[in-house]
Image (tube, rainbow, N blue to C red; front, top):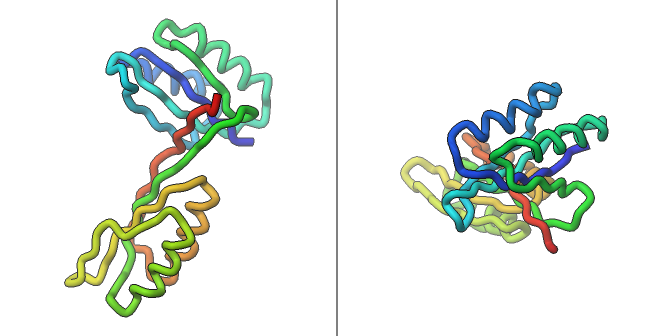
Length: 160
C-alpha cells in the first residue's frame, strides 16, 4: 500500500538526508519525494510517498521522524482527507494536422500545450492531476509518439 506522508521541517542542510535515511534504513524505497519552502523560508514542506505493507514498521518510522530535532510535524495522509496532485511535462511528435485530435484529448484532462515548435514538429504538453489521471493522459499521448517526459513527485495537502 502506498502511503503519502507530509513532513514539515526546518530548512537546514542535511535534514533531507536524515529523513531519507530513516526510510532506507528500514528497507523502504521512497516512490516520490517533493520538497519546497513554505511561506516561511526557514521551514520546508516534504511530501513523501512510500510503499509499505507493514503498518507497524511505518508507524515506527513516523515516531522516529518525530524525534528528529529538525522535524516540526509528521502527517500520514493515507487515511485522512487530503488533496494530492502530480505534474507531468511530455514532449510529443506534433504537427498542425494533429491539432484537433490533441486538443480533444487534452480537454478530457487538466492539460494543455505549453510549447510548440513547428520546425521540429514537436509540442510540450503539461498535465496536472491525480496519479491515475496522469497515467491515462500518458496512454492517450502514446499514439502521438512520446519523445521525452518528466514527472514531479506527488504533493499533498490536508483538507482540515
